[in-house]
Length: 325
Image (cartoon, rainbow, N blue to C red):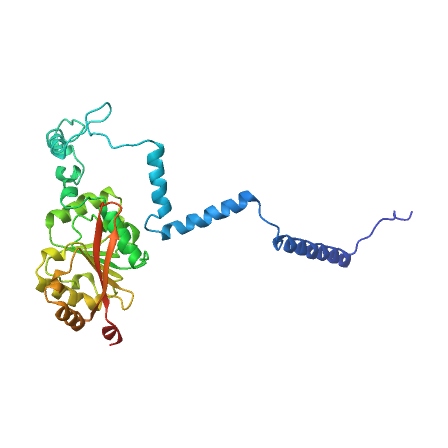
């Protein structure tokens, strides 16, 4: 008996069929990917939001739109400053009263037993916990953010930049640089021991910035060799510090720092006034600056958001003669 007839598919035919299907699928996918059809509204909105979100970290200072939004929110909520008096749920106390409670009762909780076991391994001084060091300045503590914004925007600061503050105190300004910069890129020379204790023991831990490892050195001799020499600073600034230093020491520090400043783009900013320079007289001051390789670029009047007044800053850079040499 003859075998039943059927369709016989040879191997070559099978291979050609598979190849043809693969080629057709390739061109179909290619045509879909190159389609210039407009995206849906929701997709476009999502892409725009993503782009804006990615650009946000590059912006430092608030925009005019940000300030307008804040004013609008205050008006919408009909907010007005009220007297700070005792009212339900809120118990206003002075720092002295808070400190007394901390010293007498070890804080809000009342522990029993051996006092040495009632605290963490590294006890924080009560004076720091009530933030007495926030009142050590003649200007609001919150203004530190404002100073950071002005300086960082002025030099178009990037997170990988190197910054040196002369006299960072309790990190009123420095905290914002430390948070913005990559670890170990913020340096400071500070002479006051109580300020340094507040910086290390309270401000850095309270802001979650210990991992940033800022290099803060105790000293009052304008000696910067301890910060290393394998890099150049993008920004060096002194906020009202030179007012309290002898002119001779200021000039010594500037002379030591000028070769540590990045050519062309690096800047030195000094706030309030530059009497160490003006006391010499106009021509003599210019000669002195030229002799150490610095060039005066001008005065900035900065409109402060958190000081309620204008701030004056003076800007310097390395002179072209020094850079060329």
